[in-house]
Image (cartoon, rainbow, N blue to C red):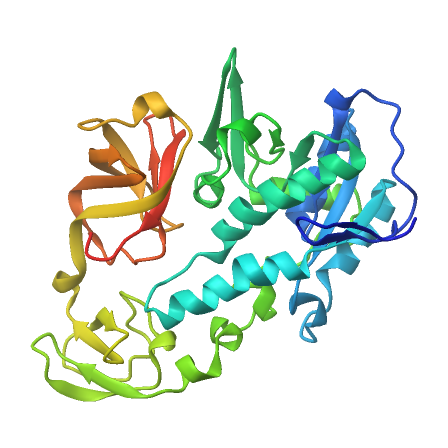
Length: 377
């Protein structure tokens, strides 16, 4: 097969790694699995095949990660697993849209004193949008699967995105940006399993990735320090560190090296724990304050994606997260209109970071909506 390219999305389909995709099953039993080369997506592909799906393995080739010398190319592991499972496998080159949609906004956010979430952006803007559309266009496959720990729950005419049964591994926070139209076609085989379950399945199947370490940090920074992916100018331009009263108390190494709420790496001993409480891009300064200065009851978000419209209204009780880890905390929706969402938490939350995500859940652990946290919320 020759290389096929989508002119609109600038995605390239490379020749098949093994066999060419051919399916005799109905469209309702065909699924493409996005495979990173980790144990989770590998077991997801295995489980779907065992469940009677015709499975196609797809690995995205992105900038940097496949040039990483520390741990090699994850795509090779994905290809090997597909060989072990006897399913077709293809690489798709997404370097150009990945750079435009993920890496450049990531760099700009840090330069603006914000804390981006590139994993959410990748899911929202690339995997569950351009890549999914490309796969359906080329292969005619309507269903897409991943190794995320979350659930898609279907009840009559309702489709909901729900937290995983293993709440310690839940990744629904990273998936909130999928559109409601796409959600019905998303398949998440790991939603009811634990990591130990996944390891056991991989070992029983003798998969080559059964004992592979979990991925951490950023894929496009070769899972090294995120600062390696930033512009040199913003990580090496020193400026003043201020106390809460505006007094100069030290010098920082570049604002892109800091995020709101950060304590480690500040390199200032103040007698009490001090955290980055604000970042001033124009003045190239960071301000330190104690924990009390970073507590907020009100959090505002924009660029909202709504999955359960009827549960998003002023005065409605919900539970919300302002970062990927931890449990959702009780809050009240105080405003939900004009692509803006504002909530008041029952208890003040530590350091909501502009650029991170506010994600709302109902009492059934289903995602209601989410958006990008704004400054001074």
